[in-house]
Amino acid sequence: MKSIIITGASSGIGRATAEEFLNAGWRVGLIARRQDRLQEIAQNWHNAVPMSGDVTDAVAMETAFADFVGQAGRLDVLFNNAGLFGDAGPIDEIDLEAFDQVINVNIRGMFICARLAFAHMRRQSPQGGRIINNGSLSAHNPRPGSICYTTSKHAITGMTRSLSLDGRPFDIACGQIDIGNAQTELVDELNARILAKSPDAELMPMMDVQDAARSVKHMADLPPEANVQFMTVMATKMPYIGRG
Image (cartoon, rainbow, N blue to C red; front, side, top):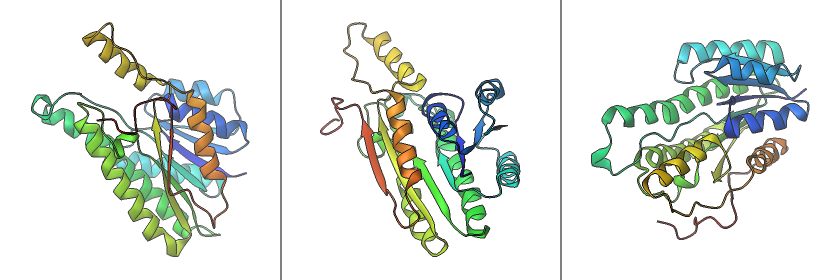
C-alpha cells in the first residue's frame, strides 16, 4: 500500500485530496489542528491515519511523521498543503503580527514538513519519494491586496526548486501545484470579503475542488523517473492570464 501525508487535511483542498487518495487505497496520514474533523474523515476509511497537530510545531510534526512512517513502513509522498491567506490590504494597513502569522504557517510550516519528509525519504529503502508543494496562482501573479499571501507563495516556488535540485541524488522528486479558484472555505471567505465591500461585485468563476484533488493524484501517481515540476489548474474563465 502506497503512503502519503497530507497537511491541512481537515478541509478544502486538503480534505478533497485526502479523500481522493483514500478512495484509491493509499494509506493517508491526515495532519491538521482540528482533531474532530480528522476523526470524521477517519471513521469512513480504515486506511486513514489522523494526526492532530500544528505544522509550525516542529516537535509535534517530527512525532507525527515518525509515527506515520512507523505504521506505514515508508513515506512515498508528502502533499505540503497547509496554509492561510491572512489579512488583505495595502502594505501600510497590514499589522506585522498578521504578516508574521502568514509567513509562519505558509513558509516555516511547509519547510518543517518538507524537511521531515526529505529526511525519511532519503533514509528509507528503497530510497526516494515525492514532495508536492501547494503553491498558488499568487506564486506568479498576485491578487490585489494580497501582499502577505503572495510573498509567502513566491517563497514556496523557491523552496520547490531547491528541493528538486537537492533531492536528485536521493531520488526525491519535488513539484508544485498552483491552484486557482477551487470551491473551498478559503475562497468562500475571500468572496465574502469582496461582497462585504461591494454587494454587487461579480465573483470570479470557480471549479470543483475535486478537480484540484485529481490533479494532485496525477502528480503522485507518476513513476519515479517522471515529475510534474509545476502544474497550474484553475477555473477556465478566471482572470489569471493578464490579471493584476
